[in-house]
Length: 120
Image (cartoon, rainbow, N blue to C red):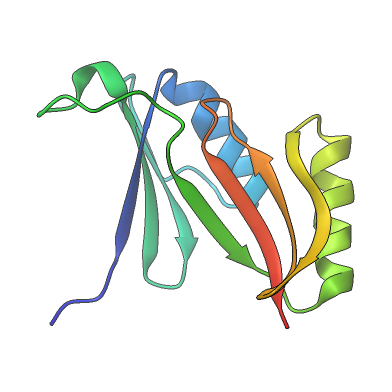
């Protein structure tokens, strides 16, 4: 059995999305071209950003995925919310307590959801 080591998001503008995720994850882009970018997303996990119009077989409309980032506690979630909001990142759900923990949801440039949460 294999571990998940790579997540791909199909995007309209690779450079714009790479800049967004580099800032959001505070990680450097390690590979970049006009049609693809890649950056570390965690231990043994890479995030690939592939320009949607070059994907084979063709991909559907962008914005249908969600990535979740785990934080240590509610205070860390609140701090991330404040940083992202100050960076003009679109917030789709304000910080809220849900069954699985404390969370909020942001949107990337293509409308993919980025969930920040602290389990609890």
